[in-house]
Amino acid sequence: MALQGRRTRIERWIHAPACVVRVEVDAIIPDADPSEPCLEPQTIRFLDDLQMKAERGLVNELSQVGDVYVRRSA
Image (cartoon, rainbow, N blue to C red; front, side, top):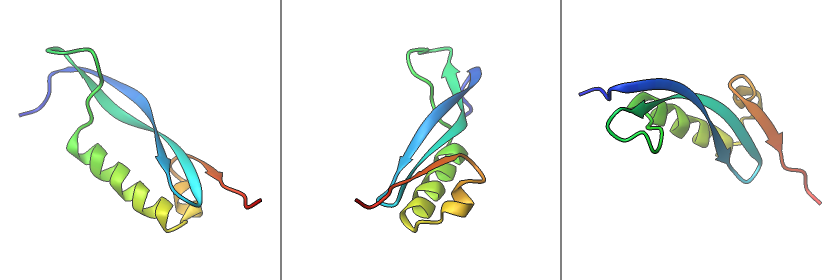
């Protein structure tokens, strides 16, 4: 059963030891409870995939889908 509501874009952050990534993803603001946007399963899988790439330090791949901030060593 699909959620009924208004579609919007929201910002999500992926945190990993080597970098931080900011991406925009699709979300739905449900008619039944508009207090917080909900993510669809395919969006959650996409974010999980980005998390794995961030943990592996795949900065070039991540930069194709969002803004990547690489952590510099002191």
